[in-house]
Image (cartoon, rainbow over the protein chains, first blue to last red):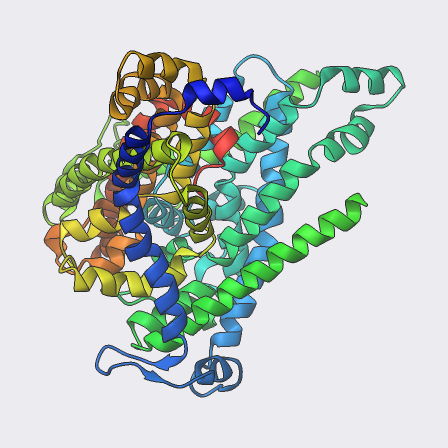
Length: 314
Length: 277
């Protein structure tokens, strides 16, 4: 790329005052974005790191405590009785919701890819849940899961399955939340669909001529060719699931601004736990420490996923 | 036969995706006691005569007493100010990063991209304090200014600007046009697809956003629609599904309209940007 003809380079070169004017214009153009970046991204990131090493709440100024917050979070069960519970809830949610969501998305994409008529309409309708506000999603599903009058239980009863108190039974909370996540799988569906369209028809034809049936074609041709797409969706899906918050917040909203983690903390997502410590228990330093534990964890998980895929490819 | 089963499966999946919305809509038109039936009834029909017995009272209740009318207006004007302002900030920066060489440009750009890696929750607490320090806490400006740019949007716009053939600009440069003239007359008109994608995704994001308004607003008069809806869910009215569903409908209708109008751009855009997940 750097070997563009010298002559063209000469022709393009502007005079020295022109270049200087360009620099000024460039700085003016990026100035608003740069100010935003420094004030609302760089500074908050660095100060969150700093505060994670302090004891800090709204009444006192921050005082340096070293690694105390981190140590306490991991070991002090009196101070942070639900920390490990929130880790467990979040991991469980991620392990159930991500495969369920990607699986649903893949099935939807395969089906849509197999038809011609009406594919746009199906795509659009399956995408609806994605553009819906978390607050509305939470509100709608609270009503759908209602133990006495909810639509879910009514439908189950038609099939002879007894109704459940979904959001008030500890064992059912995570499956219920994961189902909502799968309901909102539209983005993954669209991306899978783009991946499927990228598979050359000639390869599938060749496989068919070689006598591969639909299932074999799917396993031996489609799945391997979708691997980069699946990997991308897996990484972004895990990152998003580990940070699930808005939905759980609305689902378990209580009176005023209070919020619970569901029955027996069964829906106490990690970020919800963090939020409670920052805004209800006024432990900002500890909350910042929690946010950095999450940051590091996300980085590790992502690195592991990358490594795993590389090894598989080798 | 095979085709029939494919359509059958798709119709079932689509029903799962759509029925919650229909149920929301139906509930929102029902009179209080009518929603509590053992056998679910989709339409608000009179039990005896079977005639239409829907009501708009739930809407007037949540809009007036629940404060969702005010919240709707707040959401409208804040998104109307924020989305174009943000688009301008992002596009100007993206243009400089794509086209104007200046010392340190690429280093600054990489630094910006690094900022994308930090989870929002990590930034949340200090951001509140910055917003307080700027005197914007609990004010509409607190919703606008801290969201005035987006690194991922700058990245997307820059990638698109880079794909525009340089020759088109050189012609304008030789004709004596300045950088800004090129930006307005050449770059922006050629970038409609990416501008549309960025505008729509940023509208959807800010219209739907709950977390930032939740931490930055106290005054109920300033609530945005998602926050007012969440507060309604959390209020003593939270058990009254007909109110909640009327509120949810108010939040959902505008995005459905946007989705219907811009469906092609949105779906094509997501295929290459992955939305802002």
